[in-house]
Length: 103
Image (cartoon, rainbow, N blue to C red; front, side, top):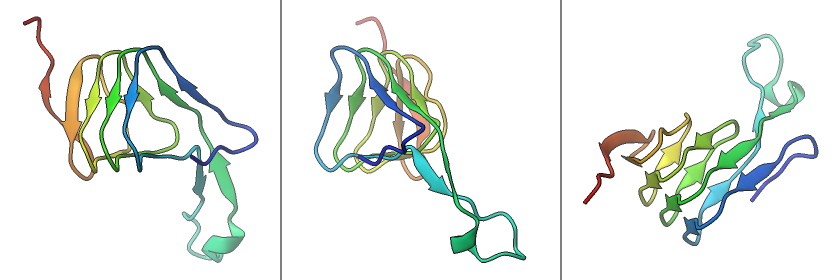
């Protein structure tokens, strides 16, 4: 877990978070090609994990992401965008592969 001094990680109730999961609220700025990347500094964005979320082994949740209620993140997925309620995502970058149902 890496949390910048101006950002936070919020974890809801009844979540399952496996081991080797990477949560990071900071990221390097790199857009200006006329300046060395190491001199462009860092930015920060919160990570919000709502209730009843399952994050599988080795997943990476990047800065600014919201994992909405009931979603599932597959093992090894790299999540770069918000995940809708009850979506199941996998892959690099993470993509929706299905939704949880009412069974």
